[in-house]
Image (cartoon, rainbow, N blue to C red; front, side, top):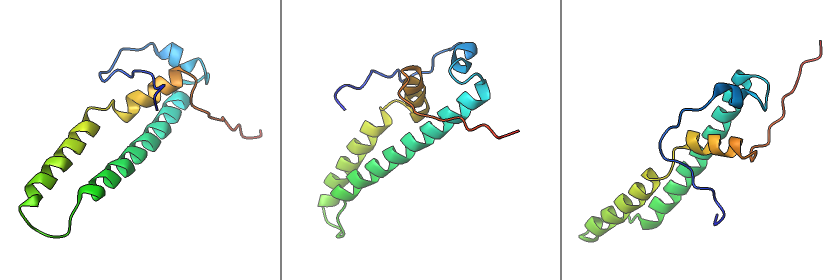
Length: 106
């Protein structure tokens, strides 16, 4: 994704009223952010496993040391990414998350 916005890797103090504004309820906003964060985390986990599978071998040799270095490099690259919750917040602030609030009939 070449056009990705730079997401901060550290937490930032935010105004709760601004978070509640799009949904009208801070708790609904938290649920939306939580669900999106879980989606991002699962996608990252799947991507990480695919990368690690690509460098995995079934036999034990001296190449195992090189393989482990590749695995370590891949893992470090994923660790440097912004946390899923921070990415979800950034997407929410940029109106990139689609959500629908279903109201129960009274």
